[in-house]
Length: 216
Length: 112
Ligand SMILES: Nc1nc2c(ncn2[C@@H]2O[C@H](COP(=O)(O)OP(=O)(O)OP(=O)(O)O)[C@@H](O)[C@H]2O)c(=O)[nH]1
Ligand SMILES: [Mg+2]
Ligand SMILES: [Zn+2]
Image 1: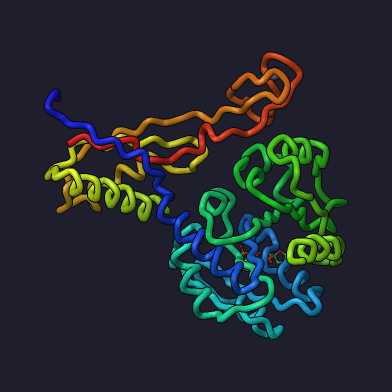
Image 2 (image 1 turned 90 degrees about the horizontal axis):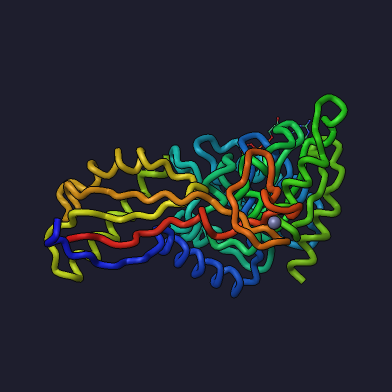
């Protein structure tokens, strides 16, 4: 139709989310909080890894925001360990976004420490939404298979640190580590890839070294 | 799943620009969506009619331009589409690096 008038917009649909994320990030930085967005498929071992990490943090204060679709088992587990943790119930959403985090940050009354935000178990959308974090931690597992970087490239591209969890199970499954690493490195040249196991607890000291390197 | 809030954002932005330009009716929304953005065009369309009801975007046509992700070869600098399970360059022995192409998700324009 010739009488249509075109109005140029060129505005990202994420713009508002990213704006709020930038605000949260600034606020957290002011409070001397280093925030880590923890991403991974359902059951990859996000909560298990957080527990292993928190146990080793020493004098660094941990805070946790749990984004779970429904239950609050994970939050209860963490609170049982004396960690300041709160649950966000997203009621079916597939990722956390910044307004949700903004409210939780208010409620937690944070200062000086590390804030872990356990994102919803999903390898697709959490990688697209900034939520005010300083770093993204991706938890992949040997049981998911070595093709994951090829199928979910964005998550691997955006990660600042990658944990390869459930390494205790390597003797029982086929996992082509070379193929996995080739995919990871094609997408991401810098993120350390650390082999860990929530069961044998191997590898977590190295994760702590990385975290402490970031907050000092 | 997350197409619902995102569709609402799209309508909010279009509405805001329509008001600013004193247009009562948005006829077309031109949206650019990269394939890596993980959005399902048909779900956006599905929610669109429901959410747009009563707004200036009611009955608007959503024109979605999809963008295929391209990698850039680190040796010969050619842009290419990747094959499944590979990041290798089709023209040389190099390996492709991710680019912004295919990650976009923005409203290009509205027609009123
Ligand atoms: N063998 C083995 N099991 C593990 C390891 N890490 C986690 N698990 C098990 O995997 C299951 C899921 O672990 P969680 O830590 O709850 O995983 P999650 O990613 O937090 O799961 P959601 O929050 O539901 O997405 C539990 O049964 C854990 O005991 C590991 O390194 N080795
Ligand atoms: Mg969990
Ligand atoms: Zn090449």
